Length: 106
Image 1 (cartoon, rainbow, N blue to C red):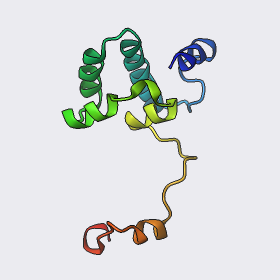
Image 2: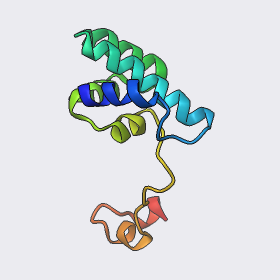
Image 3: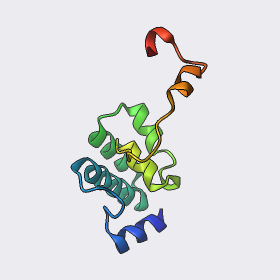
């Protein structure tokens, strides 16, 4: 987390993101949560994460747990930002998944 903080100071908060509002909003959220976590204010970080994302308390607690160990891309994904160059699962992978339900998943 400290490495990410130094990288953000040196290259800016949006250094590896496209110039779009969704990416910037996710990066701003990550910065806010990182700051609170670095200050040891996990409860406030949890509350803020819920306010920013609108997720359930269970989802928020799971998202904040282990925040210090997450890479930047994982943190951005928890705010809903996923770069287009990340591969989506192949349709054959989805269909062969043991929990795939033909009626629910199509």
